[in-house]
Length: 240
Image (cartoon, rainbow, N blue to C red; front, side, top):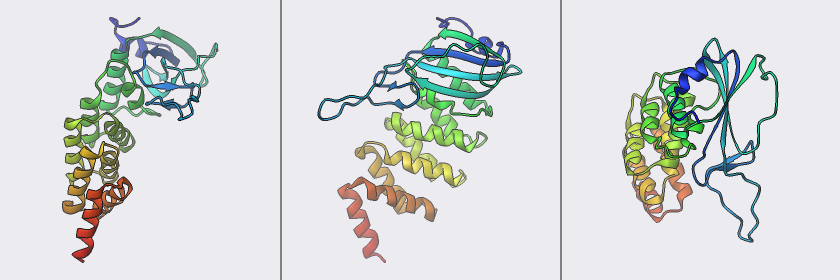
């Protein structure tokens, strides 16, 4: 394990090529080597598809001491290759600390590093980590690319407790933020348990100054089938 070693220096000091690592996944996370599920479920008749409980496997493309691309898997196995798909050597770091790996990926995202692929995914499915504080910082940082911020907002919706819910609401209400990021925050609110998400969406639908954001909130309220949403629709329609 590299739990006590300097993971960034091991990665960035690797020769040009692919750096591989693996680490423990959170309980409930499983995959078949390509598709990843964050909530293992069986069917009603007892059938369950093949889904390995980890580990998380990450392949990083490194060029000139800089990470240029990332691919993440759960389950499956590495193929024995002498060179990477992009050319260059394959450096296998073996099993590393899940919290150390998560911290490394989130730090890359916060440093505004342009990397092909999703830096957030392996961080949020790593075992023994609490990623949402960093995800909120990423979502609110307009110097970071829109795609990375949208990934952060989506995963906030999966991890959110009350503190993260407040952060998402603040993001939606910030008129200076990118509209697409704000729409993703509205979607994220719709994915929360109804006791958390529905009141926040109702507030957005009633008070937000951006017409497109209000429409987005109303759309997702319509998908909730919550009686409070129906009451809001009646209220809006009778005021026309």
